[in-house]
Image (cartoon, rainbow, N blue to C red; front, side, top):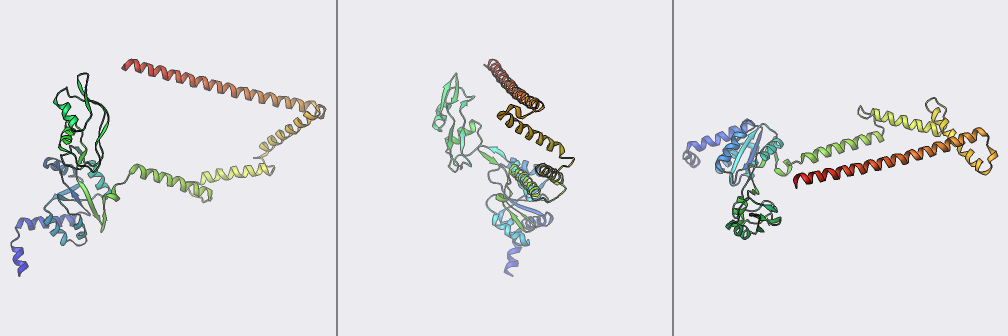
Length: 342
């Protein structure tokens, strides 16, 4: 009776709000809890519109969200992610796509006085658009090394004006905004998403796609190499295995002096080379040990070796000359650019 009496005093709009949240939970396979802290109302409305074709954003009171989750079975465990300035998001996208969409929708925003720096805040060296005036003292008071040069206020050196985790003073926050340095990112922060009873948090969803792709490529290469070394035939490696087997059998035939049509050429070449080597050794001990035909063959081999050496030397010289020309051309190009831009 006491519970019925308490329920009868709950405004109808609150009951309708709870039922709407429950209906959204039943309708969509993916349900997420997002933080909306620090998002201006106009920007939040724009985010809602941008998500229209991808997800439904529902902003409600935390007490009503808690009530809706209490009667919705396994989604009750999402209750732990309800905190200050919370909204719900419902979608058909998988949690990874949802997280990526929400991260892409974030925009740079000025930092407020007293806010905690999300990362090191760095002011870069260089000129500003400000003429000399009181702003010079304001910048120096904010810890920014400024001076006047050629009628403009310039920042003399690159400086980290606030470390990650530090509170940003009012003077610095104001000056960063005037310099159009926006350290904050405003957007929907996905705290957790639920799919088929599994909870996905940002530490799981934040995937480095470039590294992920590189890991897949590396794993594919390693698997391919392993299958080749293990001689495990697949449609992807069969050509490589056949080429490897052909090369190995050819080498075996040459080393074992197997007189087969495919290896007879290399075998004759090998025998000819060995014959010239023996003839050269014999000739060095006694010139009469070899006949004229062998002498001619040795002379031709020596001439061929000299010609090969000269060709290599000529190619090296040509390569060096080309490299020098390229360096000269590059220096001329840089000089031309220097002349163009002063």
